[in-house]
Structures are given as structure tokens and as C-alpha cells.
Length: 347
Image (tube, rainbow, N blue to C red; front, side):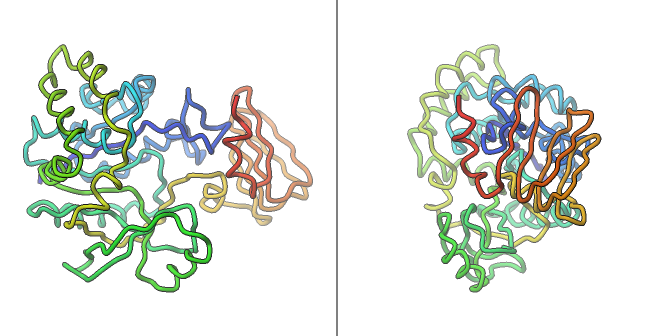
């Protein structure tokens, strides 16, 4: 099997201010305090799926050097720089058109760079199962996460009938629900969180993109004439920004008939907010999750304290709060206001 992994690493993670800022987004940060950034952890868990020379990273131009520094084993020519952010469909198309030129039968996994997986062994098993299903078929597989709570921050996948062992036909995709609807989804048992992890043969996804977004694919075809030549950067800079801003979900997943899902339970989180990080971190007897060199808490409950660049931190009397210090930026906020952090931190 000729497997390739495409890592999407262009986001800025604004809800994780001040840890994540445009000049250093969360995918390049050691969020968990384990000595590895999220993008490095992403590569680590895929390391048993395919060799490093089959990894690709699509990122913003300003982050290319960060990718090279943090992922030195990935070929430089496999780090694709987007001259402008155009959402996930153009990002994925750019990578797949590049892959198709040199690897015409490639089986491709597309993944975000900034999610967390706790059970890596089960993750690899699920990805292997999906790859085996797409290798000799025209199936598009999206990994669905078995929900553990009525989450309103994720899109959902409605499963249909069983096709092949763990593989289900997708009945429909659902937008982020209200809390009441999320509770109904959880009780129903036939709904999964949409993790944004996709598996397909490169020819399958290109055929779908040709069918559903022909304007974008014509741009990709023109761009591809310069791929692997000295003119590629100039051509991409001129043409890529003319692509429509559109997600792969709207472009393909919600329109195509050959969409399948494999339900998974491997301790996944998209780490979209401070609260989601708090739920996944080890916590002390009072529910405090702490990343830092010497952090001393007194009379504090259910707080997340993320101060890795301070020698000593002393906090007293806080409950359900976020405390984060990075560089010359400091955040102290209640956790239930975390959705407003982006607005609070705007210049």
C-alpha cells in the first residue's frame, strides 16, 4: 500500500490566546507540557502508518520555517506553503494534486495538525482499517468519534447501515447542534463527532473535486503544470489565492454518495478551547490542571494554569478559571467565558 499522510497546519488557534498567537499558533506549541508540540505529536502517531518521506504538510507561508525546524525528517519539498488561507478544500486539493503527479495510486490520510489522541495504538488500528477499505475502492472515509458527552462545539455524522465490519455508510452530516439536540444525538447512539480526519485514494478525491468544484480544479490543473519546477512558488502565489474559500465538508463530503465512516474511540479532542484541554490533562485532587516549572496553588478548584515560561507561580482563591502567561501576554478568565477570549484579545 502506497500510503501518504497530509497534515493541515495553517490555522492560528485564536481561542487559545495567549498560548496560541498568529506568530506561533497552537500546533507549534507544547500544549500538554510533554516536550512535544501538537504537530510533532501528530507526526509521532502516524510514524507507524508510513515512512517520513511520505508525509506532507500544508501550512501558511509564514510557518514554513517552523515546520522545517520542528519536523526535520519531512522532505522540504513536501512542505507546501499556502500564499493565502482558503479553507480546507483548496488546501487538500493542492496536496493531492502534488501527490498524484509522483504517486498515482497513493492512498491518502488527511489530518489536522492540532488535535490530541490519547490511545495511539487504537488510533493506528482505526486508520489502518480505513486505509484497507479505501485502497481498492472509490470510497471516501471520514473518521467518526464516539461521543462521550452532549458536545455543542463539534459537527456530527449520522451513521447509516453497516457496509464492511466496522465501516458504516454515512447517512448525513449535521451542523453543530444546540445542547438539547446534542443530548438527543447522544441518546440515539447513531451519531458521531466529526473529527476532520479523512482517508481516500488520491484518484477518488480528485474525481469528486472535479465533479463538485470544477472552478477550483481548473485552477489546480493550471497550478500543477509548474509542480516540481523552479516556477512552482511563483505560479502558486498567483493562482492559489483565486480559489474559492470552501471547506472539504461543503465541497465534497455533504454532496458525494460514496461517503463512509469508521466509528472510533481513541481519546480524541480537537483541543479547540482551554476547557477541552482541561478535561484531557492530569489534574490534582482539587481538579486543577497545571503546566509550569514551579506552580503553587492554594484554595483553588478546577482551574487550568498554563505558565511554562515562568520560574515560579503562586495562585490563591481561584475557581473554574484559566490562567495563562506566554511571552508578554497574560490571560486570567473564567472558563465559562472561554468562547469570548478571541474577542477579548483582539487588538
